[in-house]
Image (cartoon, rainbow, N blue to C red; front, side, top):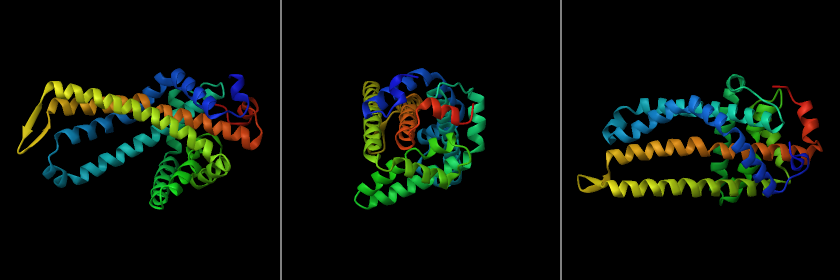
Length: 265
């Protein structure tokens, strides 16, 4: 662990630590994402490519089932990835299988945090955006608290996150904003490349409108899955470093003492 991690970090240092975690654990994070989410992502992508509007109405129940499967798979992936990163940040190693098993045991709580936070952010965003941002920053590290601190449930993890971020939400916002901007630039850049490929391949005309060719739609969906699988762990890395920084600030721990106090892998 670097010396910067043993004291409160600036936003720039948090981002630097996050990129370090991302580079170190990217193969493991991609493996977890592929194991957990590849099948539902491919199923949803194939649905988007092949289904006509009439088919969507007729098979709406199947679509809902696929969405639910994707939510469950995403929650399992997020929980396991968070565990691997938290243990790694504390200088410990957690096997992928153990991370998945521990995340599975807390799956309902992870899903509950995701749903409740999303609803709270949405309702807050309806009130002139700012309350939604405050809520998002307040609950930003709830999953990290759930996965790291023993005995927490969904509501207590959210309360824990709210307490830890008190007085530091502007810093949390800075980390989230910069990370999301980086992700957005890369994702839109990848979309632009795919658009150029589609333009070079030509467009097929359906009815009175012009729609992308089937080959381009398949390439676009495949590219989207690959980009999300590779890039989205960066956000989890940023939130993990932020969580430990908040604990150092709020509770006066250095990470060596914190690692000794937390459950072993």
